[in-house]
Image (cartoon, rainbow, N blue to C red):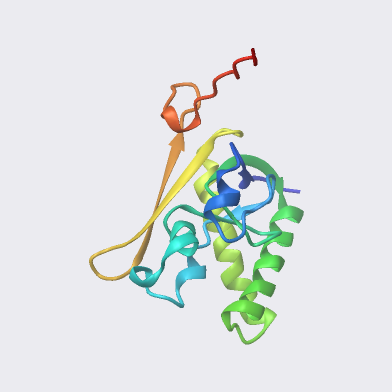
Amino acid sequence: MTTLKLPRTIRLDASDTAVFERAAEPGEWAVAGGFAFLDAPADRLTGKRRQAFANGFLGTSSFGWSTFVVVASADDEVALAVVERLAVLFVEAHGAPSLEAARPVARQEVDFMADLCRAHPVNTLLALERLIDAAGEIRERFRVIDRGSGSLGQAFEMTPEEPER
């Protein structure tokens, strides 16, 4: 059995439940999910769908979105299950003619994420920025979030509650 790394969704706070139409549950295996936006020009996306386009990873259990993922150890069985879930999604929601036609494309999505995660230690926190380039193509940029450096900034600063008097 081969060991590989794949991303899992993580929820640092409750914001995903507010900014996405459907938030992924913490701990789902994830893919970048840019394929979910091929049916609509990004310049016409608004609201929560726009937020998913701009910054969302797709959880492969709920097909909800997550702002962050964490690199995790996986094995061939996990990868095959993710491929199968994506293949079903491609048939049911994205017009693939059959599971047989969808599986190679789903495998490419999983292989891409495994390649992305390969260079990072387990528990590395990743974020995604998705945009449309000058040629009208979807581009994805991934970045490592250094949890020890304070790079999450003020948006995630925790302060203790003051006791009531």
